[in-house]
Length: 264
Image (cartoon, rainbow, N blue to C red; front, side, top):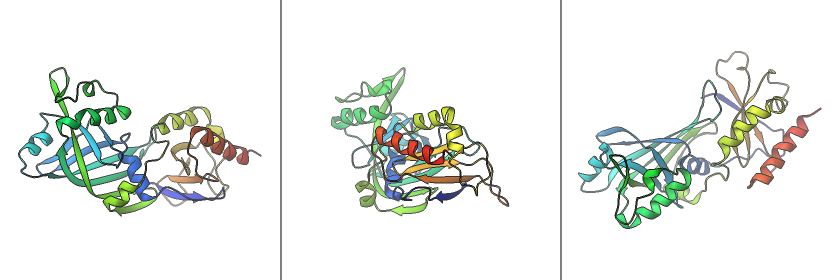
């Protein structure tokens, strides 16, 4: 993972907690796969969470994971592996990973409609339209259902470090308020504001074009142009906002303040 540093160019260097970072990854924007006994790798076309962070997973009814679940007398142990990839094209785009360990169950028919609606907020897919009222979703000749993962333990590993979380700590946290729009904001900053981002570099960092790597309510991560002397991995620089922000208006104000401070 690229080397990370924090620049105290603002009043605060506060960041999201490990539980908040895990809830943000589990929200459903980052890609996920299921791993279970006898099923070492099962891609999940779409996943999201309910209000308590319980993962909801869209899978084919004929997939190996649902077939294995049908033969289990009890709930099946499984892990949802999530990889967080930066929306901006970079040499190393993986920003972090999370592993949600728990017990896999099929969502009851009576609850399928509510689960499908929850999933459709993040993934408006046609196979979700018919799920519910004891019906399966269908696209072409493929049939779909939704599985739920009852979380027993969570691991997260990213630029902030590694952590292991109990299910209560994870459930009590909330995802970052910008998780659904972060990709659009970062691609806009990358295409329209690279000069302003470059001006944010401290004097100790070699000059050159800077790319936006990540964004949350506490600040931004920037990918610096070249590795520091004597190293081979890129340097990711953290710039904190003066205070946490919770909406787009406050976010625009926060990074405009950063740009203004960097302007001679």
